[in-house]
Length: 258
Image (cartoon, rainbow, N blue to C red; front, side, top):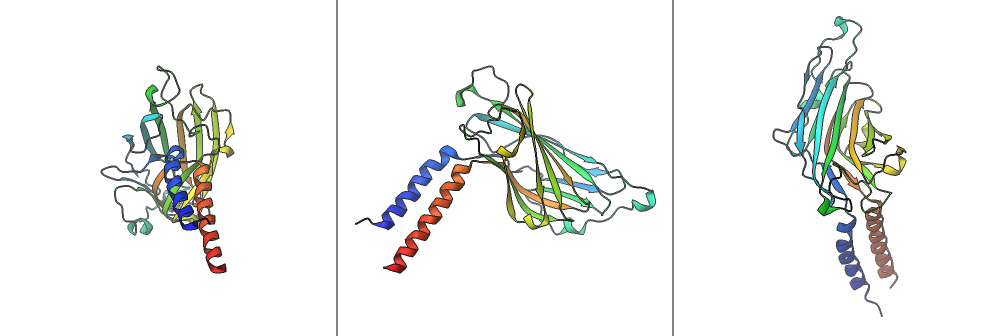
């Protein structure tokens, strides 16, 4: 007779061995010193911006380095200076800004800004199937899997309905593009928001991506959020974890029936 406890443990062990082969990679964990904190002050035209190039911690098997370029644009549109009095953003004061977080805040309901993030990679022929001399690329197919998802770890979020949107542009080495949009609402705070790359529209080769651009814009102003991590995860890993959960459920049901 089968020992279901051994079967369960073996399944866990097998999962542990198989997941790394299908593991996603992290585009950014925001582990910079000082932390990246972006703030827009409504109506003044001033921005408190941390911009520049950063080497990222998260790596894919075919990528030896990834660089993110951050730029915050103040696009406040005020009808009159009388309606553009700077506001203190009380939401931002409640955020605990530490390493490993990206903090963004707009002070005042009339504030409106766009955070533009561009990721690019440096290719190493020793880690991938492409010939030496190829340009910098990122492989978003994760071993040929077309059903990978981009994820955004939203730790905290305050703002109006439809707090912010993320417009994505993937550009491959032939300069072909694919685009998509991620909508993040207040109810998504404290969750990981997934966007399936199969929803992208365009002709970019996701195995040879030159860069991916994320343009983050708020819907209503006076929006603040914290991102803990951005990366890519393949669907097979999620399905494997789901299968493991169903196996555990089956074992519990069997135990009750004995």
